[in-house]
Amino acid sequence: MALELFGTQGCPYTAELREDLEWRGVAFIEYDVEADLEALQRMLTLTHGGRTVPVLVEDGQVKQIGWQGRGCVVGDIPS
Image: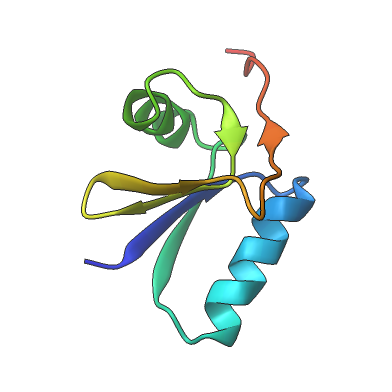
């Protein structure tokens, strides 16, 4: 299974992690948790309520939260 990247379009750390994965030729699926409520709910479940992005998941297990010690916090998404 490919890696999954949960992030947001406006988070520079999501962009940096995406660029790193692409540069290394690693296959991944990306979810924008601000645009995809299902992805946000899944990320919250995987991180036990954590709202920091980016989140890198492999085989249903969180491998990394943030990028180089930094991340962006996702606020409440209006319904």
